[in-house]
Image (tube, rainbow, N blue to C red; front, side, top):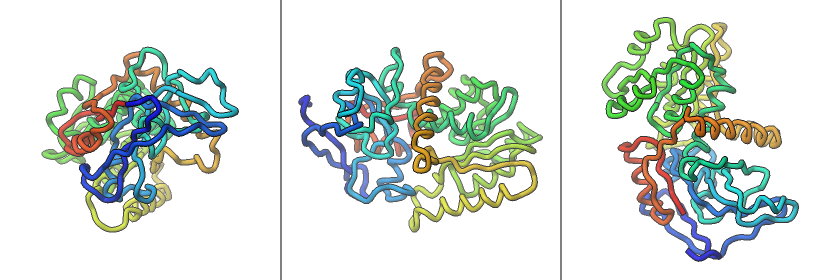
Length: 343
């Protein structure tokens, strides 16, 4: 790759992973208040899997460059940006655009990556880490000694969430297929095989009084069960509708239905609470507050990585130009952790 060459992966429409294509051009310039980041690592998250099916709630119109987050080095800055930022390793939350060799980002949205963390390691805990941290500490406010239920405990968000919950002193019950159970036990998690076991019945055996918090990315029936498994005063944090990934029809309806349930559950006089978590919530209303929280919380996640409380779980690393292969691998359900694309 030439220093002045831009390489980006384009999602042209509702295609199989092999329908992605590589586009080449010139590296963009930074405008006022912006920075050009040379990507070192970006990832394949569930969002991209939904986007290629046209199933992500607020994805842009096709064609576009996917890539929810990235880690890289600042290559250039525009007017009004501190020139000493050049050469600094940073992380950025983007929603789209990360699958590119160079990305223009508002400098105020960049978060420094501490020394000693490899770009691929850091990348695994950007969107996954900020999601897990904010759900655990800002929504559920989990305390030592409490019991939490994490669905998809081996996944990108789930694997970070169970580690942060254990570091916070919580007892963790996690759902995952049987092949992931040994790794979960090593992390102090009590696993449940969602494929062969009756999950609600097993959770009731393990936590007869209910769980203090449940984190559900599945939606549908799973979210209802999770709500019913809460202890008095417990909190449900729902953050996805993975069960509808391959459905046809409206991509908005599953989310709206879930939001309606959350509203209804919170109206019930039983002391329990429900939240639908969206990492972008509040950004439009108060961008400064959003940025402060992002910087503060992601710094805490990076510190947890440095302290050894969180181990970055990398499923595979592939070059950017093999994005189709990476997406296919991430969708296979055969890997644990996050598939990372490198420049």
